Length: 316
Image (tube, rainbow, N blue to C red):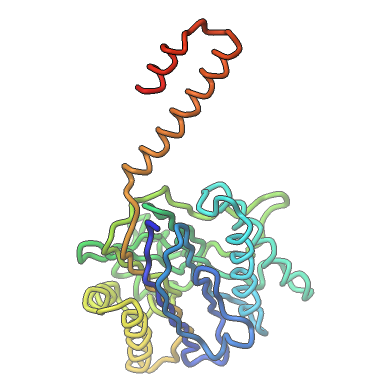
């Protein structure tokens, strides 16, 4: 096995009456009756293909819980049935289907399209690389060489203001519109239109990389600089996840506000495949495809080569 990940997740209801957050932990998630209780898990996984996600539901009368639960349920089905789950085209198709399924929750209750929804922040890993998928303001961060970088960019009003250089990223953190998102699973669309997530290109994994996936229950209360410090000093993925959740709860209490639901996944890359070896494997596969084509042509008498000449070709 070339990929080895130490993974931890912690979901906490905060000081809300219900937990609209859920997570996808490489095949595991919280069932409906577990969501308000929250959950903590830690595992070391050596599957060559792995997938993790945080989903933050929204909508009254428990619609948010249903939206995030539906999202992770469909992720599990996708992971189990898709031949290439890290494919950008398959992932885009998946997100479109999830969005439609979430919207049907609203419509089945006689509500308007988009009355319930969910964000998603997802990391798909395979062998030597990863890619991210996101909709909304749940985030993916990457800690590499002691520096934290935000990998995803929020689909939000304040991020649009930052992009237009109307406010700074620092001002955005405390802006009154910071929770207004511009895109979510289940949002109303024109007939025939599909929701398009932001999907990254494949990027190299490195042993020592540490990822954080989180709902805004963390990012709204804990500044990126503090997340970086905690990530740098935490001795394990489980310790990092627990410390981040505890810091968010403490910050909300200090500010005199009611803490939101908080869900955090931390992924430590213990081992990753080698990119060059993967390229060599692909070249060898292509080489054998050429060789078999030549052999078929030779047997059919189409090339006029001798057996000696064929052997020389195959040995190159």
